[in-house]
Length: 251
Image (cartoon, rainbow, N blue to C red):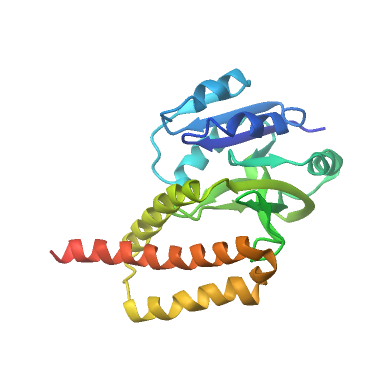
């Protein structure tokens, strides 16, 4: 089978990085971790697990992941976040597919967990992301947040999942929430977007209805209600942070 490198970007992920790496060690021949100067033992744990660890300041997801991809030496590159784990079924399918494929990359199914619950609805089911690519055929495009892999060639699909344990607690959710809403507001501000308060107020109930009713979050019980509520609040906070940046400019 062709060689695969795993690459991960990290920041204070000491509780999860070892499990992430362990899930891929029997599949990949190289592990690259780019750490944004974590204040915990993330870099040390990754190095002990056999990763090549690089450290650089975080200046956006796009640039951080392109840097990580540039350090990969294998023909194929697999990207995971520290809170993601490869399933055994996925590894079997990758081993079977790569020797004869003509694709330059693969969309992979994600199985999402929120506060310990497998989310079967809420817009979190049937979610796919391009995570496995030919190293010389791919690069990241985007801004500070919402980066995406641009692949020169055809994209296949793998229906075996990456298991994504995104938030173990409400506290961990809002720690990331604050970071992502700030980055999103900064990117919108950089792009010249304006906060239109009336439009935001109309958007919030739609965001809740979309996730809780249209995407059947109601069937995920209280977890679905929380996900829909938090996601709606995310939109509100993101735009209020954009408003604050505009207000600062005006002053």
